[in-house]
Each structure stands twice: as C-alpha cells, then as structure tokens.
Length: 119
Image (cartoon, rainbow, N blue to C red; front, side, top):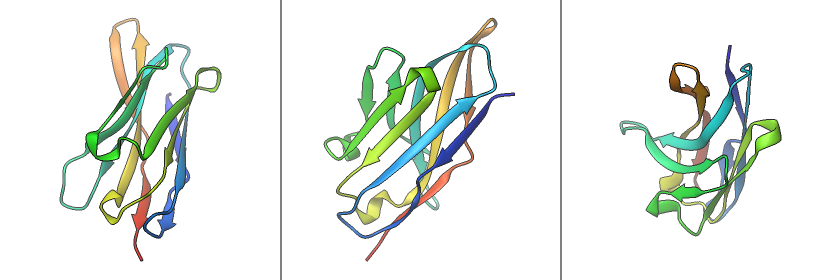
C-alpha cells in the first residue's frame, strides 16, 4: 500500500522560509511526477509545483521565484523550499505522487501539512 508522509509545515512570519518534505513508499512501481498542491479554507485545491523523474519542473505563477521544488529519485522523496512567504501562502499543503502501474497512471496523496504565514 502506497504511503506519502509529509513533514515540515508550521507557523512562520511573513518573509520567512519553510521546507516541506514528502516521502513515498510501499510500491514496486516507478513514480512519474511528484508535486505539491495547496488548499486554503473555502477554496479549491490548487497546484503549487510539480517535478518529473527527469527533473522538469512546473510552478504556479503565484510562487515562481519564491518556491523551489526538488526531488531525490532514489528515495522517492520530493521537497518544496518556500522562501519569502506571504500570508496568502497560508494553506494545507498536499503532496501527490503519480505512479506508473500496469493498468496505467495512478495518483496517491499525502495527508496534508498546515502552513501558516502570519505576523
């Protein structure tokens, strides 16, 4: 059974930094894309950043230049370095891993980690 374990959330003042981690385990299949999404209260879950196994990245416009996604393929772990945090970055952050399984692609989600940016 696939498990995604997230860590690194917390409380930070505006302008501060946090680093999120997400480790995927429990499958013999390869992970294609890993990514981070976030959901603020009363809003939909939105993409923050994704990274392929080859290292190609994609970012939401709102985080470009401030957030950096990276990945350790050997550990099936994805990271999100968040700098210059703003109050509007406050949300629950979710990790997603897309596996290449015999019947096709399948997405798995982490449980979420709270990030709060406030003075």
